[in-house]
Image 1 (cartoon, rainbow, N blue to C red):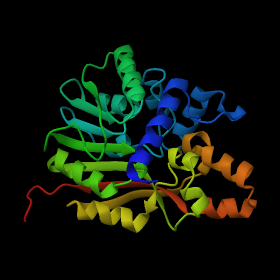
Image 2 (image 1 turned 30 degrees about the horizontal axis):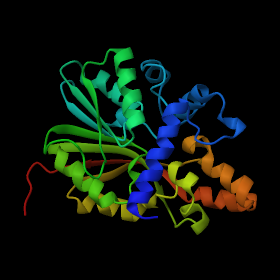
Image 3 (image 1 turned 180 degrees about the horizontal axis):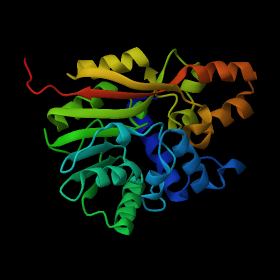
Length: 280
């Protein structure tokens, strides 16, 4: 798949999720109980009960792989940018951290998600949150206006991760920081996974090798690039199990092979800083 085909698949897949108001993009019987599944996934990846109850109903779709807001050290009055904001879950949590004097901008490529997030913002009366339609490779924000960038299991979907990190660097103020949760690989996945549409929407087949991912961040100009946490990420958490279902039901590979593939997938939390002065 080329970059444009990939983006089209992502938009269509996440539009379907937004319309279904659940974490599942398939037609399996396991798709029922979307809200409960989302809550369970979110608890498992680091969200507290207080955080889960603090956002409007429908904001949490269970699509993340970590909790970047918890580690971003947000302060009152700051401006925060969320890449791939979905239905607004992390944006609303960030809004509580930055307060009324702060500002949160969510960017998402899917019109249906932008509409859903806007509706959720109205329900929760979030006056300091706005959502913008756009690609994370071409962020619809001015240069140097944000204090912090967060993202949750989204950059792995981009076919041009170097461009994403370059755009994040551009949008940040000098001294600004990035805290992201994302999926990376310890080794290459088999071709049948990399070529799977379901696996791409489920955050797997677009993932990059960990060393390459970190190198792309450093090449963009970031300093103090640190992995703040790394865990094995069960495939059943990814978009409510589309990848695991495909592997087990359609491909019918042995269970030990499934475990081997799953073992190569990692959820990482990465923190990086834009230098206060840029030397050419």
